[in-house]
Image (cartoon, rainbow, N blue to C red):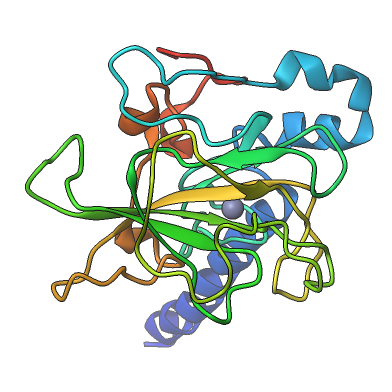
Length: 238
Ligand SMILES: [Zn+2]
């Protein structure tokens, strides 16, 4: 009897310990295929040229253009901080080598651009026909295009707040990489890019939930899924 009670009382302790271990792994970057290279990117800027991916054209047989030049250094479904195994990263972060407001960000694919009135650093593009599943509509989302304090937007003047459904071609300049996170933590210079599913009413779903997003790998032509041991830096076909 005593033994059974002891066993039951240990269950919550074991669960708490397992949870603490998961959080610790997340904080330390364990489980992230890019954590070590990302640290090197910021600590040793001389190595940056070896990590940068640049694509003037999409990869062969891939519909999307990599929307900015830089180190694809934080990957889709990465469970590490500031994300968690329960709420992993929903897109890819492309870290540019330059000053804030100077590294261009381009549309990944033809579509209709919207910038909500309150968006300082973000645009979203509606693609009525997913090039990989033509019967459905998807969206591509681009954010962090503003100064660290959010005062200066780096989105080009063609797309002021309140822009709705403006047609853009793949490769159209949208803005420049920035430092604005809109969150209480600081970020390094990058653009966050994700592919978002449509709701039944045709609007875009909440981009912060991974279940509302798609793995960008087949659209870009290289593996950016943190769960599938990607090769870094990314290259076409990797
Ligand atoms: Zn991101």
